[in-house]
Image (cartoon, rainbow, N blue to C red; front, top):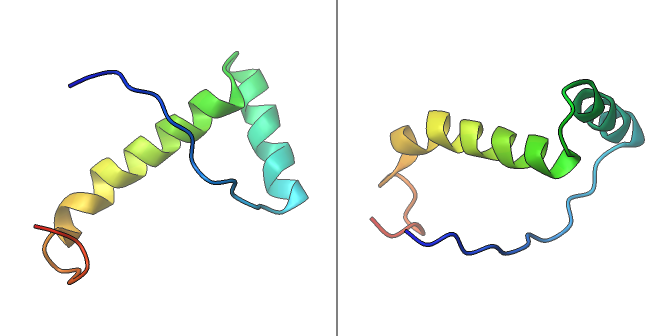
Length: 60
């Protein structure tokens, strides 16, 4: 596996959610980007496995 980096399209969120995210990242001495990447990875690790093959648009 290579360590290629890329960007995602912007995600629009309510100001209150952005403020919470920023405050949490600061409280953990982490960047907002790190918090978002970690959250996405945790979400996919938890939810992706059970849905593989069930989405007709997703290659198996």
